[in-house]
Amino acid sequence: MTQPETPPTWYADTVAMPSARPALAGDLDTDVCVIGGGLTGVSASLNLAERGYKVAVIEQQRIGWGASGRNGGQICTAYSSGMGKIESALGRDDAQRVWDMAEEAKRIIIERTQRHGISCDLSWGYLYAALSRYQMDGLRAERTDWLERYSYDQPVRLLETAEMRATVASTRYLGGLLDPGAGHLQVYAYLLGLARAAEEAGAVLYEGTRALSVTMGDHPSVTTESGTIRCQHLVIAANAYLGKLVPRLRPYVMPVGSFVCVTEPMDPARLEGLVKGGLAVGECNHILNYFRATSDNRLMFGGGANYSAIDPPSLRFYLRRKLVQVFPQLADIEVAQAWSGLIGITTSRIPDFGRLDGNVYYAQGFSGQGVALSGLAGRLIAEAVAGQAERLDIFGRIRHMPFPGGPLRTPALVLAMFYFRLLDMIGR
Ligand SMILES: Cc1cc2nc3c(=O)[nH]c(=O)nc-3n(C[C@H](O)[C@H](O)[C@H](O)COP(=O)(O)OP(=O)(O)OC[C@H]3O[C@@H](n4cnc5c(N)ncnc54)[C@H](O)[C@@H]3O)c2cc1C
Image (cartoon, rainbow, N blue to C red; front, side):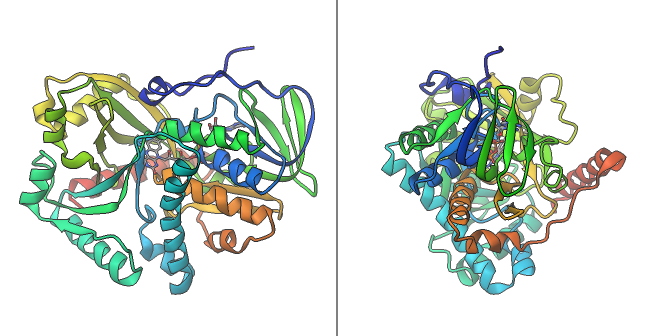
């Protein structure tokens, strides 16, 4: 049997990697089976095991092989859709609850790192970067919305051009919004810490174990190459890597390729000269660049999007070109490592959490903001399994539009991508 893979990233190269967990061997009866060993599945398993449930997680490769071990590690405020769409879908009161839950998602990271002693370079301070007056007006409106409409308790403030350029050494940006309540972390170290905590709480994690088919009903079952798992409750946490496993969920999440790299290490003063104060930076563009310093003095830089699931021929070259567009002064710096991963997006960019048939729970489509929200999803799913589904069901009430299916799927997405590029070009 082939060895399960770790994600091919700087993250995996800079953590103490535990030895591979065994694959499932034989049939199993359990209270809850979780498909997917990323942040969502592992968070759900930790919450469930703490509540006393017998939990089995199956991951087709190694824990964190999907988006959770490949992302930019940025912890964002609220939702990538913006709060307006959520308020239109749910009304004012539930939109406030959904806002509060996004804040809870950030607190979960703090609580978990402290309670389980997870060392993961957690750092606060996030800068949303505007490339046009239109985007700057958007940030101004968002700040007002967060503070006055949703009572955000952080002193978010606007940076006009001079202060922005003193903070991020790039002439690309006209201004920004500084959010002390968002930040970044070494996401794989965090995930491996959560996985260890889940195991200590009694969950069993199987690696190299792929779900081949799922049967729903009063007692769902999951078949794998090496055995069948029968359970009372099933959690689908496969997100953009779901494939055709659960046809009812597939139309609502679109896998979009996204790319990240790290530079070679730099002199710390040079790095601080690029982005002050260890901030994470994310552009307001639809197809955005984002970046931050790492603990070993590299710049981590992400950008681009791709609906075809085919990476550009040379990812390092592709990302280096984007990096130098933002920071021409880095023309002498090499990209040391580059990788890609799949982001699960929904049509509205609001995450898709809910239940199928009462005892099958899912969370997907974080739309590029799953680092924090996956912890919330894990908690809400555990509450629902325990019979307290009120909070999960708030999300479940949001009506998500399916992406076009069949032969129209790829052309429609290519068109959407073209449209977003156009909006970015004109600064909208
Ligand atoms: C390049 C990139 C950059 C990103 N940057 C950020 C960021 O900076 N901030 C942010 O908040 N979010 C970011 N995201 C999004 C974030 O990573 C995700 O929202 C989050 O990791 C989702 O976690 P998950 O557990 O739901 O999914 P995943 O981590 O993708 O986990 C799903 C797992 O399910 C497994 N699986 C699938 N099918 C099966 C099967 N049949 N049997 C068994 N296992 C299966 C997969 O192997 C995978 O490991 C980024 C994503 C990418 C790809």
